[in-house]
Image (cartoon, one colour):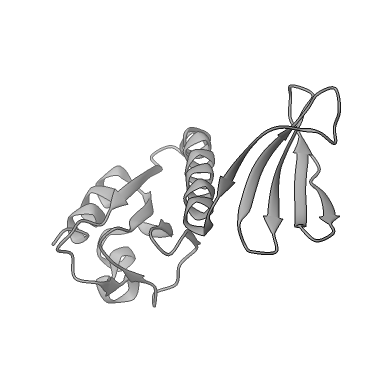
Length: 158
């Protein structure tokens, strides 16, 4: 795994970057104004930015969620392949669902499946506890048997 390098840029903020396979460095500049800039450095001059994209706080959160989701999906096949009968699914919480905690739903007790993470407007929540409230717009990441996941999905509908 690549090492993340942290550089303070006086008057601007902080840059964290790492080497990617093309010989360039990819980084995020966290500005003092809280804006973020996704940057790709030149292969020929590692201090020269070849291109960049400015991101506001919401866009940064969305990109982080997208990357986290993609990473988990890529590992899903490996995880399920390790234990026969194990399944993992992303269950979107639809409009009309009454905001309810995981504990109140008793998903594990009723289905044998477990909510291992959630994503939504508030960002990703790994290993949410029973007090975590699920609401429309969230997505529950559920692990269990295929039957347990089907039952959990039924509990997460209005």
